[in-house]
Image (cartoon, rainbow, N blue to C red):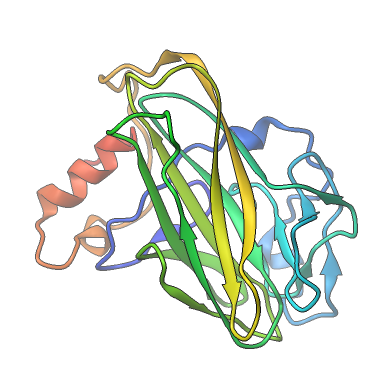
Length: 238
C-alpha cells in the first residue's frame, strides 16, 4: 500500500519500501498541482530512478521507488543502470517497481525464485492500474502472464518479495525475464540484500489506513481474509 491501493478481488501484497529513504531527486508534488495530461516529463535520476541498461531498443524499461506514484505523462531519465535493487529484513514484504514503455504491443513477464532465499519465499507480480492519470491500484498476475502495453503511457509492474524468517543474510540474486511481443527475451538481474535481523510477528503500533475493508476481500473470501492480509503486511485493520 506504499503507493497503490489494492484491487478488489486480488490478494495483493505491498510493503513499506526502504527505497523511500534513498536520495530521490524528483519532487513529491501535490496531485492537484500536476497536469497528468501535459507534455511528457522525464523523471530526475537518482540511485533508485533510472533507465535499465537491459532495455531493448523498442521498449524502455525503467524503475523508480514503489513509494512514487507514477503519472501517465512521466518518462524515464536518460541515465542508465543495470537491474533492479531492493533490500529487506527477514519476515518482511518488499516491492520494487519495473516500468515498461511507453511502447506498443505486449510483453510476457516471469521471474525465478531466489536460489538460496528459502522454501517459504514468495515472489509475486502485479500490474498497476491508473485512475485519473495516477497509479492507484494493483492487480495480481501469474508468473509468465502477458502485460498489455500502451504507446501513450508507461505500464508499471510491481515485483513483491517476501523474505522468510530463516533466509540467509546478505546478497541474493534472481532473474526477471521480459519478452516483448515480436522480440527477444530480456534478462534483468534482481538483486536483494537481506538484513541480519527479522521483523517480529507482533505489530507494535496501530496504523491508520484510509481504505475500505470490503474492497480488499478476495474472490470467494471473507472480511477475515482481508484483515489477515493486512495484518500480514503489518497494518492493523479495525
